[in-house]
Image (cartoon, rainbow, N blue to C red; front, side, top):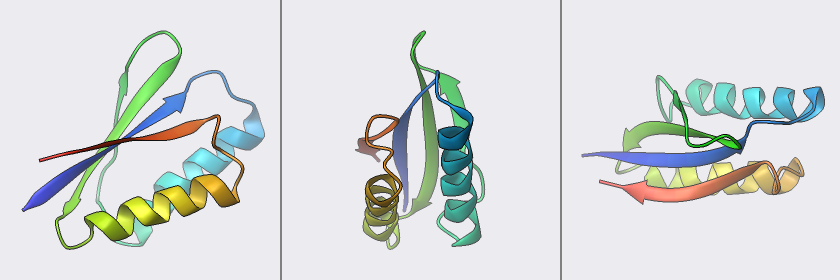
Length: 85
């Protein structure tokens, strides 16, 4: 069963952080967690990025995202919102 993972991404960020966000999205795709990432406006300050992954990969994908956020100093830029079925 597919699981959806959502990320809240700040809109106003510098070029360095924007590149890190793009690399995260590329890594999620290249590692096979998803094939596409959907982007929607949440409000005037944030985008809501969401992607579906298999239930087998959900925990691994969430851990990867959290590790990436921490190791690339993006805690004020990206937040793992949660997951829904």
